[in-house]
Length: 333
Image: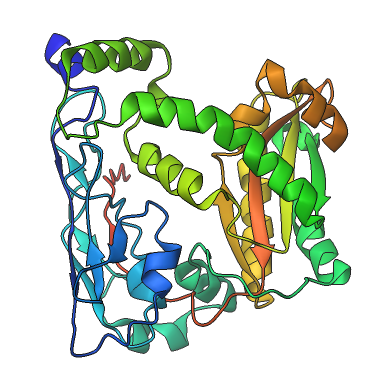
């Protein structure tokens, strides 16, 4: 137990190796702009350069979106994200592989014709962080919302409320309210010189005892990116905030998750792009943002759970990538 507690702050981590093929790279900047952690910058030689900062050897969460969106296949990744020990020890296997739903090890091009249209959307969907400056018609947004309404929920009680915002001034107000909170936490967490100081280690170890899901190291690099860009929703033309009825049956948070995935998959099937944005939501529920919540219509018994950025993707975003493997146990008769 005590050994695990020692490694709750900036735990020892093996990151995937990222590389840029300078022969293929056209310096379009898509990877630099859309990296969720700010883990790719313009290098001194004018090419994108993977980096780490704030105590992280690499600022990478292994999402592979940079690989998926590169128009010339200039980016590559090898290996997985693995926290080796402690409270945040990774429970995935470390074996990266592309989709293999048929279990025959065939490449995607041979598998794809045998899959349903739903499966194709599932495996190709990527979080989109590059949006066109083009509004999404209300009719399309309605189709996305309706898919959420028909998601299964505990006791069929549909503990949902959807808040659709297309007013950019209001979206930015939500962003700035959240960034003000995230900035303080991020500055407290990150180690500018890369050193893991005892004071911070003690503080975040203690916090991890009571807030284990909120002290995982990965979101802190995304907070840094949000502060620098003064944006959380990636300039999307629309956002949807999903609220739960806190009196919902059993587990309304799970119901919201299922509902949100219905929305996201429908949006991508319509040619739209989406990105789950959770960083904006935790601060939105803090007491000092009660005025903003009231303005958005989030009053008792409603509570914001997550949000989705929605818009038209700028260039190719959706693509098949490799993912880490999870433990699977079969209990067969």
